[in-house]
Length: 327
Image 1: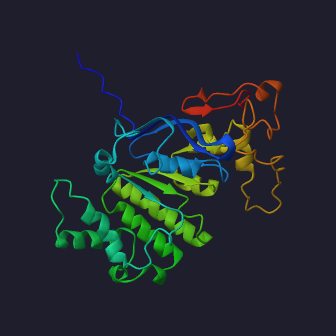
Image 2: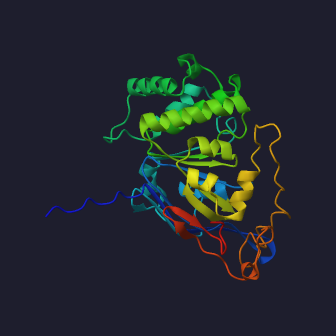
Image 3: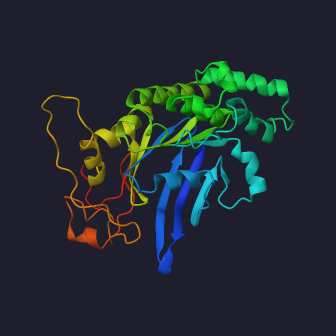
């Protein structure tokens, strides 16, 4: 009797992750507050939320740039949460990051060719051998072609490029070691709108061409809609809604997600404007009791002030952390 095929394993699995920072006077800040999700190979997970919700901190925790306070992070089925640096180093070739600030990410005193060649010199080839000078030169040529920059760019310095070109260089550096996972931390938020579209299209093309898996962090829902297959919405350190892009953005069930989607400007003359959320974002140091969103929720009920809603499935592939989701 033929055995049923095994379900594919997630490339990245995050299990109840917390990241807490100690503050003065015995206070603490939970930047990431019990987050769980998984990302399948070839998937693009968009991570969205207002500034200060913890999405960038979470992105750094995924790659162990920050150590988590508790919880588990599994990459390719291996628990990397507490791996020593020597053991973690070979894995770093397969998971890379593109940062928001394209200029601060590059050493202004070094040529682009040297910056891109450095990871190739530091890490060994897949067969364990040291890369030769000719193989590094060949790889640099490939990287310039991938991000649509001329070969002459390798001899220039970061200040000689525009913001969009520098971000292309950062993408090339992230791809140098042929990773499987790329975490992009708001990679287009500092760029002009026209350039944003070009960089997002580049991410999409590279994902299809190389079979990459992305965690794409952004606060612009239009960007997330364009590139993501699934969306996770964060508020005050926790995920409040998670599901397919079309479901989350067009049939949102959490009041916060609904408010975010309604706040997106509509390029239609005479389009109605929706009232913004009431109140201010609570302090992440002194989070509200119960549902963390109840102080701004238009549908708040007495239960919301005392009971913490857990992320639960309301339809196949659609999870919401709300006592009274909009169905």
